[in-house]
Amino acid sequence: MVPRTNEQWLAALRGESDERDAVAEDLVDYLRRALARGFGRQLGDADLEDLAQDAALRVYERLDDFRGDSRFTTWAASVAVNLALGELRRRKFKSVSLEDAANAGRLGLEPPVGATQLERTQAGALLLEAIDEALTESQREAMLAELGGVPLMEIARRTGRRRGAMYKLMHDGRKRLLRHFQARGITSAELLPEPSRSQVVP
Amino acid sequence: MKDVEKTLRRLLTETKDEELDCEAFQARLAADVEGTLEETFAALMEHHRRICPECDEEREILKRALGLD
Image (cartoon, rainbow over all chains, first blue to last red; front, side, top):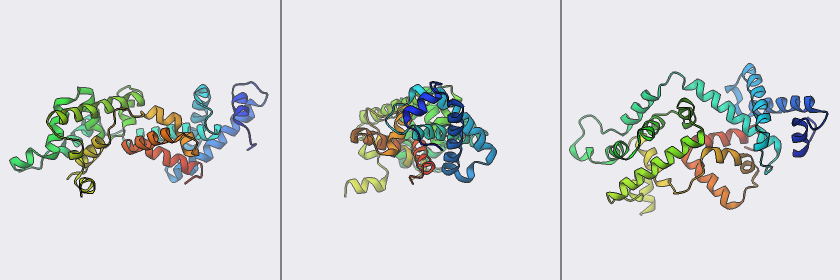
């Protein structure tokens, strides 16, 4: 591939030079090789070709988002990796409903069958109680589904939210949980998993 | 302690008032892997990676894709 400056890439892809087609082909070729290195055997030849083409189109659509604080090719590769990961996660979780994932997340916090009264007032049970009391329905469903193993990116896609908006929803949810605990005299340090807590307070 | 509980406890203890969201992380990821971000912002990126395993995975794959691993 011919070495180009960021400005040369941008000018060509915006049609401001006479080598647009050649540059567009170089971009697809570059992204195909980058995806092959990044994902290895997770992507076959047909996937690589399709994803490289789709990624090049996305790069072209988002040229104005390029901040100029890296090499253009690095940014383009980041766009391609993001697109490919989204596709792989969509395939991996296509048979998992958010409801089932949320139930799995809930099960992971529930006290074991036959738990003592003490166990029911500890740890996971308190976390689950906080989730049920302090979170909005959207936050509760998304948080439990995430704890049940579904990536936030996939939860966002299925609920029609942007990934950034989904992160903010969860961030606000975590802050609500912390306020819930603080109101009950439980500090964030006390929430640390046991091994970490012993490291903090020897 | 169950893994789900450990994960949630860890997330809560890592929570800050201001955090980068995934889109802001994605927008700076190229500069991050090239090491050109200013220190303060690089710390925000690192914090986001601790909260968000998906973005952390994305960064690792990008580094591999660029031959930076």
